[in-house]
Length: 151
Figure 1 (spheres, rainbow, N blue to C red):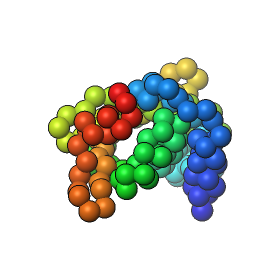
Figure 2: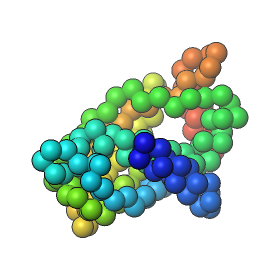
Figure 3: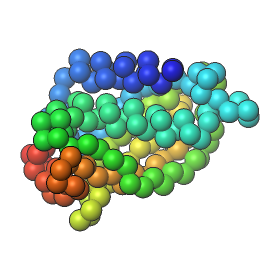
């Protein structure tokens, strides 16, 4: 349930923040590790990193205009692959900056990088491969997504 509140907050933030004129520029979210984010070892649960990355992508899509374009074109974002490296643990109540940026792409995937920063140092770095799916036409080529964003 707590993630629903975070998601609503992130959607509102993306809606209220000004649109970025450079979709390839990184976006940043500040999040806090709450007790319900912890595992039995009292640091942030591995699965929560993935949930936070969802929040980072939602925010990034919102402030870059990609969310509006995807709704207009009936595209749905889907994650195809995630590779994450955990560097240091995140303790309770840690203030974390989640940096999200669109990277390169290949013929199939758009590549996204998430960096979790705590006290000025990376705590985890994730590389995500994602696609957009059209309701009736199937996978959308990354080049078409770039054209939609004018990049």
